[in-house]
Amino acid sequence: MRWAIALFATSICMVAHADVGKAEYWQAPNSPDHESYNHEPLPPAIQIVPTELDGPVYADANGHTLYHWPLKNLRNGDTGDRKKSGTSACTNEVYKETSGLQSPYPPGYLLPELDTRPSCDKLWPPLVAADDAKPVGKWTVITRKDGVKQWVYDDYPVYTSSLDKQKGDVLGGTKIEKAGGSGVVRTPIGPPPTVPPELKVEAFGTGHMLVDHKGYSVYYSDADSPGKTHCDAKCQTQWKPVVASDTSNPQGEWSIIVLPSGIKQWAFRQHALYTYIPDLHARTLVGSDVPGWHNVYTQRALPPPAQFTVQDSRIGQVLADAHGKTIYVYNCTDDALDQQACDNPDSPQEYRLAVCGNGDATVCRGLFPYVVAKPGEKSVSRLWSVMAIDPNTGHRATAGQADAINVWAYRERPVYTFANDHRPGDANGDAFGEFNGYRNGFKAFWLRDDFLDNAYRR
Image (tube, rainbow, N blue to C red; front, side, top):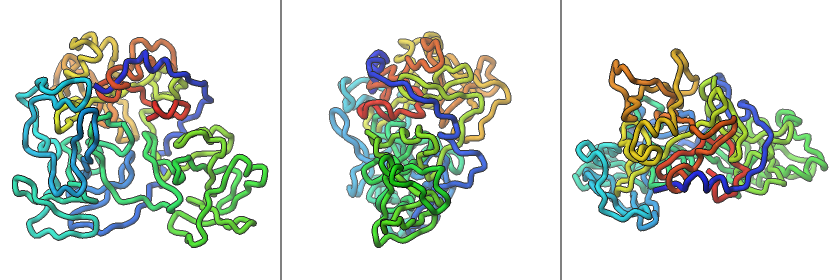
């Protein structure tokens, strides 16, 4: 499977880091900031829906988020949809055996819960096009093997997710790298963000962050005034202006500051933009440790439940419960050809129980206990919810079940603590499982990981 054991992670050398408060990670609930986007031609009934974690996404007429399933190479082969293939690999076939694509396991092992295992197109209904649908912009149409016409966007077939119930739900996948595991995962699609060609947007668990064309983080300074820069020659030994080309023009939230040298500098929401010269790696928050300097986000996620805390740990800064115990998320993708997710309570629990309890639910609950929600607790973020779980199976509890427990869930996946974490900031359960915790195992809820070596960063 996907994760190496936790002992492997503990061998990575870490450095201590200054505390960064919640304000650096999450936006205020009343913030007006939303990521702007470029408008594209759309088929009838396709709409654009704002979401908290993945920015604006395309959705069907019911508001259900649309997804791609791009082909990805695994250890022993590949699966997913091939670009421009004219076909969909997500069919009505119910796979009964492992594919052997995810080393080290060979093919031919029976998959769990075969009597209820759905086909790919039940979990991922194709976005059906009318018989007379016409291509528009990046949208085209293919005919599936069963004769149904399906919409295609940017040369990949388009699907909805059976997990999404409400408008704005993005539970089937995310744009955040590795957040859905290391299998061939589904990703939401949406309009391209409105950014200058010198910059791009990177998705993180705390929001969409601006980076330059090389991936290095972009910052702004409290010392600047709106539409003006006060970064003098000494300042510029550490901070480099994000330069706009001579032909660039202001647009929307993007403006241009002309420096005394005649160089044009980009500004976003009236903040002059810079990169931090001492940054050693792409996608870091290191510059924000300098007093008065901040990373730039097009949109941030709302805060988690109020009783949660932020803790410094050996792997970076992590989300923790009220007692400082690190929060963990569980990742899982099975090894069938259609790569079904096994990380949520509606999917088979055999994988999770095997990793944390050798198949024993009691052992598993002792090692990775659920984060229990107290009566009346709520979150301002729709990414977080309270879910009733059957502790003996790991599935959703039935209505009125006497021994059900109410637990916190992130994106409709329960979260956990680890029994062998004894002090605030301990993260001994990180990478517990297979392939560093990404294929079938547990990962700490990292908020900040920029002091990790690139090979281990999320």
